[in-house]
Length: 275
Image (cartoon, rainbow, N blue to C red; front, top):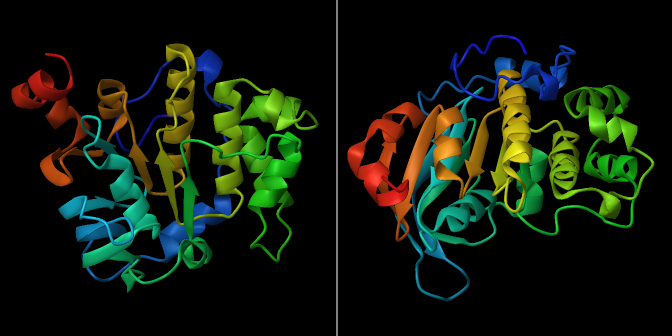
């Protein structure tokens, strides 16, 4: 694995499970580099969001989460803290009654999830995130549904990132292991050439070894310049790779800092990391 320009010691160092082919999501990297916002704020921000589902009570209360280009931003907290709700609010899946969501300086608060995908948001939900009856390659092709150009190079780059998917490209995705399914889901989102990648519990239900491998792949994606916003239950491991981290409690920001800062914070360790 090449040296990370973002955090020298984040991620698993076992070279046997990391990508050494040097492939990058080139178009996405160029887009992230060339579309620098001049607003002085993060590339993606859910700014002081208050809202909830339908006409129900507010779940988020002036909650702010953000991610810069090339950065891994992690949302952690106890069960019921509003982590996935905050992610869904940024993606337009629930009502934001106060606050705003901006991508590359553009207010997208009132756009539908479909419109946000066109704007450059890639979202991987926690469950039901692949087409089990389709092959791996057909799943990836479905990810390119908004593209009108030749996406073969992107397919090659996804296979470079997840070599096991190339080996199993003609196999029904439903026959894969849990970790491999998650790779398909992330790969399909990358096929859209997103400006930002959002992951809701990407390591849910997988073994610690597979979790480390997925985190290594997520680091590789961030190195191409794509901001990553991720919700994680495995808080300690997620904070170890996070450039920025948010601890939510009851839909509110409780702690914000770098992953290292929150790992070193005694109150965070005692309250959320088991001491």
